[in-house]
Image 1 (cartoon, rainbow, N blue to C red):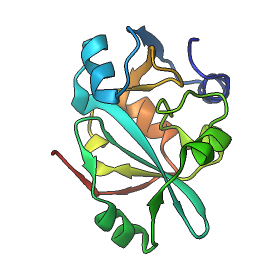
Image 2: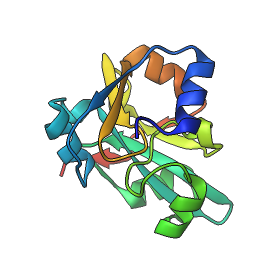
Image 3: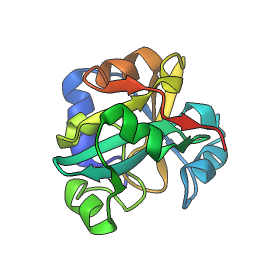
Length: 156
């Protein structure tokens, strides 16, 4: 697999330049960063959370952990992690654990951690466990233009 079809169609439709970085199969975004030889602080990790009104994609650097209580305060909602079945239904063309952060390609709202706000370039999972998508920071932030931005993560 290269990148998920919905993701590719969306990025191409937005006219954003990107390239892909193949790597050996990994289980976590931190392992993906190591395998692809990219800084973990510039690899965007996506976590699907749910609330009473639906879902949201929380996006943080792979080197960070989400502070769920802070995220709940920022969103003023009670949140929980989405189940594998929920994630599969939202991101049907992606492998479990390889959800891309571009929620607008899947009609899922995004909240972006502000720590990704000034990265010169950004990498993220392309929908499988063997391919990262790489683009400039400004292009990434353009794709995230509808995202809410807040601080809700920390380094472990």
